[in-house]
Image 1 (cartoon, rainbow, N blue to C red):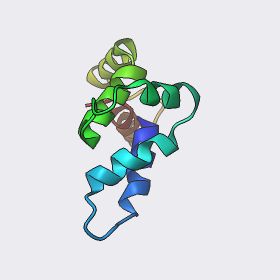
Image 2: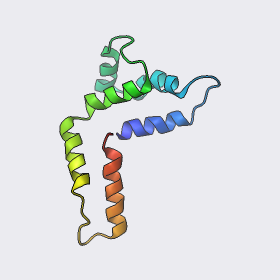
Image 3: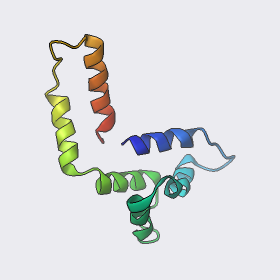
Length: 103
């Protein structure tokens, strides 16, 4: 998720008069990718992705495995503060789990 989050943050700093953010995301995404991810995007059939939401979901489905997603969701649902960590440390760790888990 980090790549998507960083990409969306960068795109949010770019505004073009009359150009929808969705279009900018779709056009710029390939420039943020390298190697396997770039090859994957280029292998998609032209016109198969028509919005940033579709692109984002497809990317996460390809590179964020179900096992990894399930493991993170399990960490979130069973989260407990460890006896030696402060509330702040536990809270920060929990928020990181949430950030790293796809919707």
